[in-house]
Structures are given as structure tokens and as C-alpha cells.
Length: 309
Image (cartoon, rainbow, N blue to C red; front, top):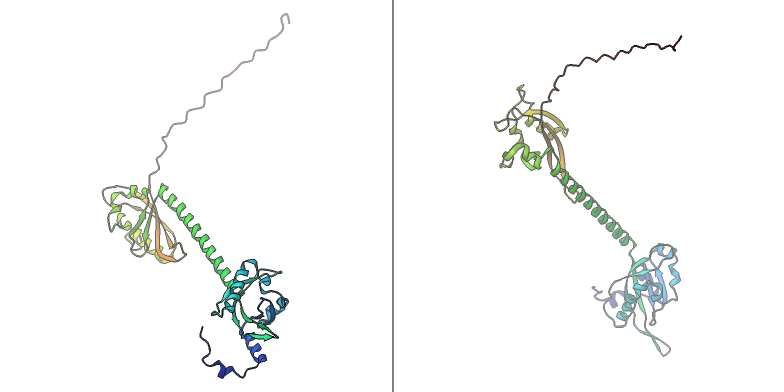
């Protein structure tokens, strides 16, 4: 703290009334404490605190107006004023009957000692700042941090479930970089479908398939990836695998855009999720001629007559 360079010259002609107004305007609440720690006078720079009934502190011990955990701080402030120590701001809470505690930040300054009769008078002026706005901001910050933690663990659980499904899926699932088309991740089913070539650096999924037979530049797997990246719509087509390692194999390729998000909620690069599966021609059922229905057994009914009729 830096004090005035020449207070006697600049403030020496100030009377008590002006000093009282200055003290009241400089703080949300100002207390005058005697040597026994009793509040002898108080002023409010905040009309809100005055309306809430805190003027009843007058005549009470300062320590009796605060919460139990704040009483040691009040005693420390009074000790510092008696020792003429540099003022320190301390957070002190006052109980409020109609809601949460009232948080104030206090600093105390000792006044020059006077005398009343033969008894010296040791008084202190205590300045208080309302911390309710700061407390509300801190509460909002704590709530935001808790919400971020909940979202973080929710994303972690979702990622764990996704990883489990990714690994155990019977369909080949590949994650490609949307800009370059390079493979970033593949599950075991994809490695089984595309073989060891998928592990080669620079391997491109679009190169695995033959060009479209119709010869149009918009057909084929590569143009499909470009459309998915541009439009953001899911597409599916059937393409034939190129090369000799798998012959005459038609594969269904389903591609969808995906925006990866970090655990903190920040958007990362765009990727393309591909699901591929080999199409097996449907086998025809063996034909069996229908057997003719067996004739119903015929029965002849012969009437019986009683003997002697």
C-alpha cells in the first residue's frame, strides 16, 4: 500500500464530518471499533446492505456479528491494529437469516489514541467491501468446471464404447483423413479384408478398387469420397476390387463425414468413416420337383343287419 506523500498538507484542514463522508464513500460498509472490539458507529456506502437490516450491528461486539469460522480473522485484524501493523484484507462472512452468508473483505486501520477522562481510547476504522458479486462469479465458475468435468467423462465413456464396438465389429471400418484420403485407423476386420497392404505407408483405400466401368469421372470410390467431404452427405456404392490378390470380389463401401472433437470440446480435423463388406452372390436354392399328393385311402362302408332280419 502507498500512502499520501503529504497528508497533513493536503488533508490537514478536513473536519470529522468530511472524514466520515469520505470513509463511508470509500467502502461498502465502514465500522468504528473501540478497544474492546465493540462496534460504536457504522456507515454503509451500499444502500442494499442498509436495506437488509445490517444496521443492527451497532453496539454489538464485532466478533459476535460474524460466523464462527471468521472469528479468528476478526481477532487477528484487531491485534494488527493495536500493533500498528500494515493493514491486510481478510475475507469474513456474516450470517444472514434470509439466505446465504454475507461475504465481506475487511481491512482495519488504528486511529490516533485519544483520552476520555483519564482513560485512553483506542479506536479503529474497519473498511468492508461486498464480495457477493465475486462469490456469484466463483459459483458460476465452479458450476462451469463441474459441467466440463461431466462432459469430459461422458465423452470418455462414449469413446470407450466406440473403441469397443470399433474393435469387435464384424464389418471393416476405416477412418480416413478427409483432406488427403490417407488411412488413420482401421479395425481388425478391415485388416482381414484388405490384407497386409493396408499397413503399407501411403496406402489409399480409393486405389484398392477398379475405376468405374461407365468411365464417368464422377463415378468410383475416389469421387465418392470427394463428394462426401464437400457435401457432408453419406453415400454408398458397390465397387470391384483391383489387383490379383482378391479376384472377382465386389465390395460395398459406405462412407460418412465425421468431425472429431477433443475431450475439451474443441473441434479437430474432419475425417471420413468407411464401412466395407464383401458381397457374396446369393446362392440359388436347389430345385426339387413337387411330389404329387398321395391319394387318400378309400374306404367302403358295408351296412350290417341284425341276424334274422
